[in-house]
Length: 389
Image 1: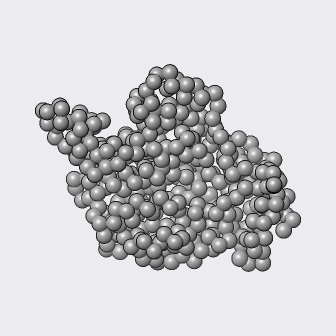
Image 2 (image 1 turned 90 degrees about the vertical axis):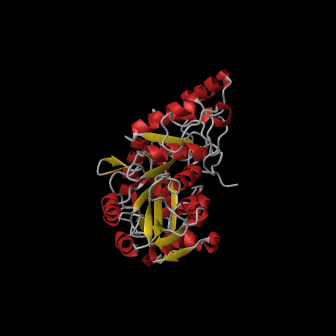
Image 3 (image 1 turned 90 degrees about the horizontal axis):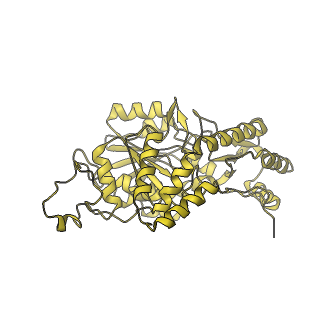
């Protein structure tokens, strides 16, 4: 059995997170409550937004975020509306869009940033386009100046899936704050971890209350006293179990909120370490013409390090991956690769404007892990390993 020498991900927990769990256990209150609310409040404040709603995963955050846009009073999304999406993102960026009956219009990525090809994005907009889904891939910010200008000009909703990019900045502003709704993940391998978890950020009070209802069975419990999405009746017996939206149960537990509070205190240090590692990674590979590495836009929070085997190099990805496996270096496809090449695409109502670069990343690319501590030794080992090819 090959010994792992360079891990894909690692735990970010210390004694603070363990103590947070013990404190919840001692309270004997495990379902969503005070700790979750406190984490939501601190998370929103941390990123300069008014409202945060925590869910049991980033995927669930995407689900209720998309759902919330269908139930707002003015100009809601409708089944059959067109949404522009990048060819490369995680599967659950796309699934909720399909599940709510939206028509997906796929746009190619820039081979160097792995985010939207901005020329292709501008050309892809049609009179039917109601929303753009912006995904900052693996910590690297989208070009939000250009994307928000397009949305403003065309009166298009901006939905931001920021699940891979907590702590990244574009023009001094955090990613995950540009959209009408914005999602984050706090899964094990992400920038902070609550075991499982995710959040939606918004400045819109109506959407905030819709999100809370969708998260929690679609009922009125946990609504603001001045909630704009329903009128409270006098019958408290009925109000306690009054359902107003076709919702879900995607609530987090108290442990998730408590752990999140401890992790949020460490986020700045985690991001600094990741950026320091990235600078070293770039120094090792920026002049290696065999590989295309991700070009940073703004200030990336460097989820991982992508490498695309240059088609002109004469090297096969198979040879590279075989050598990595032999060396005990863990690696994965870049964010699930091009979703158009997955079986699930047959279920989507979709059109494609182009995917040449996404295919190159899909068939020639991979990523290795970054960590919230110094990994220069692992990066030296990666460099030495790849020099043998």
